[in-house]
Amino acid sequence: MRCAKCGAYFDRDAGEGPVASISGSIMGDEHTDSFYFCRSCQMYTVEMFHDQFLGEEGSSVQGPVPKEEGDAQVALVMQCPEPWNKRCRCPAHMAYFRGQLD
Image (tube, rainbow, N blue to C red; front, side, top):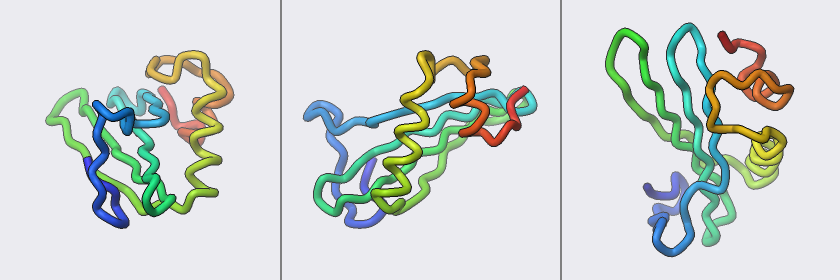
């Protein structure tokens, strides 16, 4: 995975993996967003993974995301005790996915 702004490589072995991830189920499809923070350019890159219930899975990259916006999204994700649980319906999940969860 590389930074969407400067192209720096995120080395998981060096502790540069995602700082936060959240999963949700929308119309039977699993959506997982993972936030990577680049120490070099101070921007976020978001890897968006989509596992379709009746189809193929895929991923895309969003960014660069300004630090302030990324910090707010990461703070929202961190409010959930189980951000990996696609069936969670806590206020943080509902806000992040804009109420569109199954």
